[in-house]
Length: 220
Image 1 (cartoon, one colour):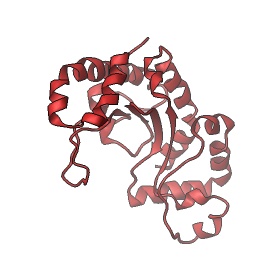
Image 2 (cartoon, rainbow, N blue to C red):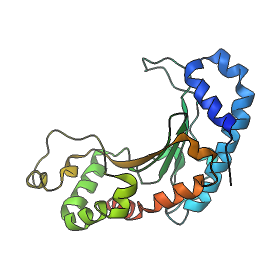
Image 3 (spheres, rainbow, N blue to C red):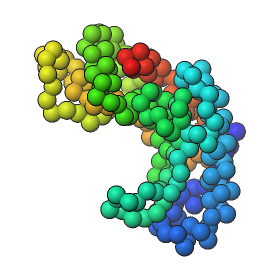
């Protein structure tokens, strides 16, 4: 099934060059028809397809999709709109960036699929770190799995500069013990949204994260 059209890409290409209320309002019908509506259908279908991979997933698309309107109160960039559309598919939708789910982002530059743990409390960081420390061999096997590496590469995340014992002695063996978050992603060419292979590609690639996401969920 194809969800988007060339008009979708055209709107997303024009938006960064015309990121102002006057242009957006004059093109709002196009946004609603070519971007917002098909994205909601796409996310609705993706939720159904990912239910077997994401535990307790019973949200609706409207609970997952982020607004395109930016909060510019504390930003130096005062342009009023995001240059992408996005959604967080997890058991609590966009309100949950902790338990592993699927974050989808579409712009004129690329399509992105993220997963892992984005925001963790101090206690949760310690829980994940301890689980890695206690199950180092299992963790290393999971993140070095060829199918995971082929799709997502490596786990990323901001790191602490220092860490205490007992983890200190294991940093050289596993540098991810320094991480504050544990996420990974894949980028696709923007033209993927015009393909009938879009949803199948996302689903198949997300499945390669099953083992690491299970590990992270159990740690939490």
